[in-house]
Amino acid sequence: MFKAIRHYVQQSWLLLVSAFVFGLLLALANTAWSPRVQQNKKDKLNGLMKSLITDANRFEIVCEDVQVDIGRGKIVKTDVYKAVGADGNDAGFCFRAEGMGFADKIELVIGVDAAFERIAGYSVLASNETPGFGDRIKGDYFRRQFAGAPVMKLGLSKSGDACKIDNEVIAISGATVSSTAVVNVFNNYLEQVKERLKQKGLVR
Image 1: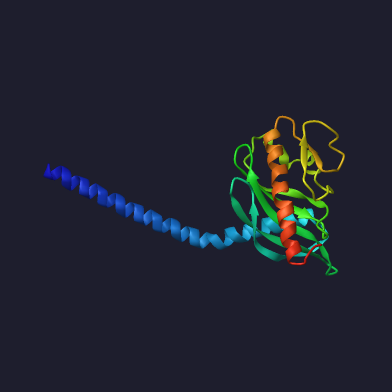
Image 2: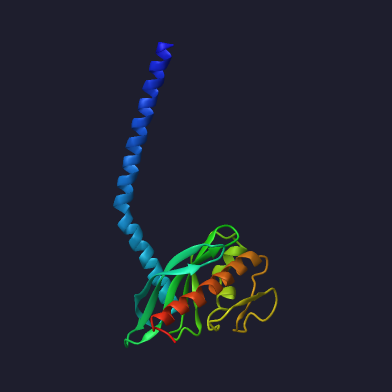
């Protein structure tokens, strides 16, 4: 019995030391790679914002940690960027937005015009929606319905003219849940972000 206890202690000690060493190595690797990961995220965000507001020469944060109620008592924060053109004039605003899709959280980058009256469009920052169905929220058929649409409550229909740009969005066939998720993200964020910009005197 004594041998069994000693063997158990020896094995436990080896396990604890191994866990400590591997944990230390992971922490060191994370510290070493963290700046590059953060820079890659920043570069990706800037690239997506630029694709939405092509007239922009640079992007400046004008509102940090804007609180947005996305439903069910969940509050998230987002930064709002002002797009500045080469002439120094405002070209629009962009911000990151999120909501629950069919499979997982959907993260979007949304762009609007300088008056915050028209949607410039959106790009998908992160999504794990079903390939061939929900992931079609990344495609032109769905995304182009938002470009030029008014900043107001958006609706979703299963049929209609997808080429008509208004506040009625035509769902992706076979992906109603993912389509609804994107529309809900817009409805949750547009009004609340615009109200915050109004309070700061950035839009009327």
